[in-house]
Length: 82
Image (cartoon, rainbow, N blue to C red):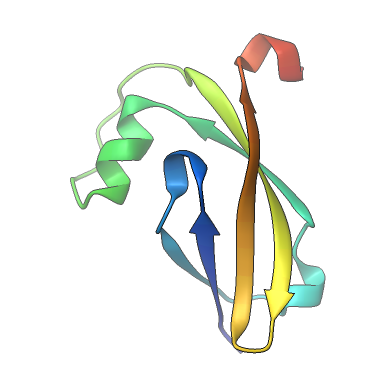
């Protein structure tokens, strides 16, 4: 069963992701590395390595009746997360 999640706010705002796991098996919090490469991929460009993450975006999962949502909480520099 596939589920669709949409991201609200932050660098992934508007991105829709289909996953093959039931929503109860997904993490409530997602920490996603952000880099120029990731932004270009979400814009439809081909994958090309572009260096390390410049920040980590943190999202909190919320479920509604029609599908899941991840809402932006904050960003941090990668060294502060470790």
